[in-house]
Length: 44
Image 1 (cartoon, rainbow, N blue to C red):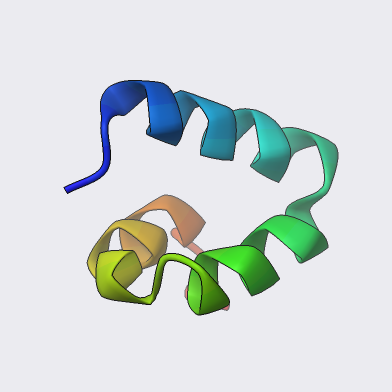
Image 2: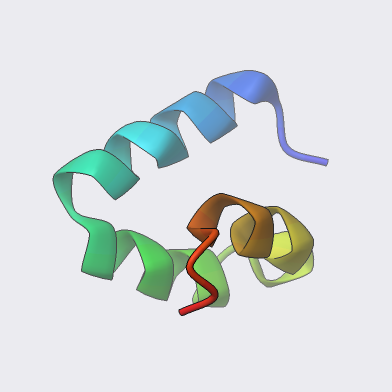
C-alpha cells in the first residue's frame, strides 16, 4: 500500500494535470487500481 504522502502527491497531480495523472495512475500504480477507481468517482 502506498503511503499517505504519496496519495497526497497523487491528489495534487490530479488537480493540476488530471489526464496525465490518470494515465500514470493506470500505468505506474496498477496494483492500486482500487484506490484509483475510488478517487475517480466518475468511473472514467
